[in-house]
Image (cartoon, rainbow, N blue to C red; front, top):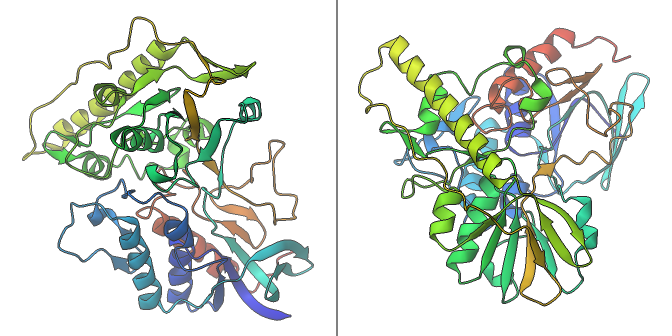
Length: 411
């Protein structure tokens, strides 16, 4: 049995940021990682993916991007190299290839069982991220067996797909990017779109992330939001990590030959049924985009901002007068369904009474229970909590809390 005052589970950006903040406060700790540093970025992303945030926004406690392309977007190999360099610079103590099997309560802390021995600790930080498991709807069980099913976690490139049509389900950032890539590879593609948020890559001559960063949108705190549960479920913006394309939205996909249909609502007798509310979802998406642009314009006017272009507005998303409401899956026309329906954390190894009736981890700005913390979840303390650029502020706050309560009983 190994003993340590503080233990971190996960060596992605959250775990490494937490490690750096603890080291800066002279708090001894160890980081446990199931695979390698930046394991999810290394092994659970598709080949062509790039970050949706510019390189200048890759900022962690005591570390930031120093390359010659601040306005570019990191590829996955570049992200893993960035995080490896961060771990080296921070001298993080990482026990890699150590899989956590269970976490249970002790009188004075927690027992963490791994496939390489057990640990006892007084303070435990869960930094395993929010994208461990693909969220696939229950109706997937009704898909005919002749249709292959794959999730965005398993997808790497179009070469792994069977010849024939592909139904992509989900129209947030992941869904629109993969639909475009698969269509460009020659597949017929149908995209099933529910709630989504359209957004330009650049606005008034600046990247949209520059606007959101400068206007304080990304650092909005949980107490500034009326419905935090709703805010944590907001879809990711329809963006792509490239300046070559202003929009990666339903309109641009339709121009590439992708058929757009409504939300997949059911599968009955081998037939996929789609909602007839596509027009409403598109109108709501445009409304949300324009509300944000209004906010940014108001901020620019209030601050007397100069050096940006004139106010812009964009044509509404064009929707067909009527879209397909059903698609028979039994004749082999669609060979693959790709689920781009979101992700969720995996805490199946956490054997503690810290979950709500829906199975979600309960926390208050990262504080779960005495001596137990979580880091890296969407809108945990502020809007960008799950991003490389946002996790550092949360890690700093939690490290300060740990320092203040250090030495107290975890009971």
